[in-house]
Image (cartoon, rainbow, N blue to C red; front, top):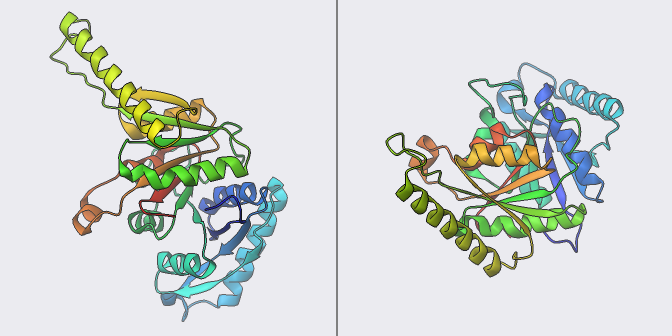
Length: 287
């Protein structure tokens, strides 16, 4: 995504409330002059049971009513598409539009802790990552007035996210801030004030800060405000986003293999289901 050309974003739309936050974020993207394309996917199995024009008219009506109620800019255009599954249709739309990213909603509101936080389609899209995927809470009514936060893990996974975060921050005149979460080295068998442990902990913290400084210098980010935290990455990043009133958190993610997709839950997907602000998950290798 370049600041020299106006990006195009695909916005996944449906009739339930989970897409309301996506519309709010799409309106924010439009403030910078970006093109937003609202896409509703008609899954093939529904064709014998419903009339496509009826569904699309309802989606259009929902967009008009929501935009009017919240004072939003409506998507630049609507583009219905048919596919076997919703995620396949959204992926095809991203390819057809040469989109800079895909904006979707999630199931869980910020104040809810349900068993399912993302939803089936969002979860599948985060596994496949056909493009940068931005997951927005359904109860998001405004975009935070704070920075764009770039979460770094000091590996190559984050590198593609750097340019994405920088460009988005620049286009929307927001500061860029960096957050790294180190391991919280703590054991119930070691007293917190054990002298040798305090020395070892401080040495570890110094090592982490030094590593962050080296990584940011390597990537031309040495002048960016940095926050180093310790604990569970998803929890700490969500906490940082809330405290900083972040407009967006950007994280990198690698494409997992078949076993990884089946059994592992990445920090990116957990954060996307947890954060009180939009979370952009950028695939490694994205340009």
